[in-house]
Amino acid sequence: MGLKPDPDVVIIGSGAGGSAAAWRLTQQGLRVLILEAGPNFDPSDYKLDSPTWERQNFPQKPGSQAEIDYGDLGRHDPDFPDLQSWSGLRNQSRQPASAARTPSPIGYGHVLGVGGSTLRYVGEAHRLHPKAFQLKTITQTGADWPLGYNALEPYYSICETLLGVACDSAQSERPRSQPYPMGPHPLSTGAKALLKATQSIEQKWEFNPRAANSRPYDERPQCNYCGQCARGCPIGDKASADVTFLRKAQATGRLTLLANAPVSKIIQGANSRITHVEYQQNGQRHLQATPQLVLAAGAVQSPRLLLMSAAADHPNGLANSSGQVGRNFMETLWWQSMGLVSGLQNNHMGLPADLTDWSKTAPDALPGLTGGFKLTHASLDLGLNGPIGFASRMIPGFGIDFKTRLRQSFGSALAISAIGQVIPDARSYIALSDKTDTNGLPLAQINSVLNRQSLSLLRAMAAATRAALWAAKTKIIEEASSYDSFQATHVFGTAKMGHDAQSSVVNAFGQSHDHPNLWITDASIFPTSGGGEAPALTIMALATRTADAIIRME
Image (tube, one colour):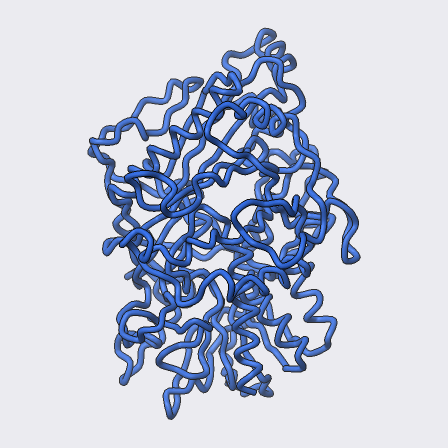
């Protein structure tokens, strides 16, 4: 094993949190090393110009997906049969109420690679609702954050400017110190139909803040509205971490980034300080000294690494004197409904997730329920933007009649998705599995059970989604939700932040209560999941704030 020259800061992971921290640190003159478990991705990997584009999802390169084990995912609750997924087109039968919830083919949707899951995210750039930081104070349930909206607002603005977020600055309920860098994108025909149809119901649809260029910005082109954000952006208008934070950090000359270098162990020395990390690259094991260590591997892999790094004086894992590492896991609570609207045309074109409804996002927005949710126009996100996806889910039959119906109705699909609050449950946590990866290390095991609070909120989400579609005169053909299966892109909470070292893992700046030079900058530190907001912008803002705290210590 060879020792490498010491940077000022070592970062594990190059997704939203790792890249934002690296940018801020290098801008202030610090030398940074990023160890990324996955490979590099290139715009040429996103073959959206291929005739087979619709049959290809985000590319999976060797090492770009961590193997995951699943434990207890709960069972269907017989009191909520209305939440079961169904498809009228496929005559899909409802599953028995006693059936166990299982992972979907996607399961935990993440990317190991330079840029992390921002490579495949749609690019929603959301600020949390100000009330989201005070969930327990407001509802007597869950937890409060150790900081408030005002502490994070300047960092939201910094990250929005660097990314280039496009939206109407007259957004409700989230105070701003400066306008969005760019005006909003043009709305799709489906979004326009929703705006018109929902004026008479209790919903407030607005432009969705999107980290994609509505005009040329920061040497990146304007969006071409191909609608394929989740398959990877080949032209670079979508503000993924590789073309924003990492590009700027590398331009300083103070960033070294090693891809295909998974970390296998964090090593503690004297005075509870982290002295080294051990990583693998090209079949060899390396030790790297860590003056300051930033862990940004995500809410599944970060607790896995802390638990795997158990030592004689930390038998339950590092940073875990509270026993909270891996606990408080929060998955994505989601619902989606879709169907056809007679007369709607060309809704296979435009920007995915162009419109959102924030009216039920606050944690006290729904009488009798804890937590909120948002609605999003999702016709492009859910794979209805190509003839294959559209036909296989919206049009029955075969032959000449089938082709005629496809030609007449393609572009008339309308879909809405809902994302809601998850309250941590003792049955939901990350553990080390008995199964191992190719390096002989234990896999992360996801245990995630939806309690009755989550199911009640899911019912409200379904009702709101259907109400919007019915207002637009949609014939609903298919519905699905997290009631039936585990499928999560946004996960949170497994190393939560808080003032009390007995009940949290890190403080308000992401600094470990146990190890003074260990910092965490991913969604594992979220005490709550928010009311459906996409977490990427909040991760970036928190990471930038953490970087400033590290700089003050140097």
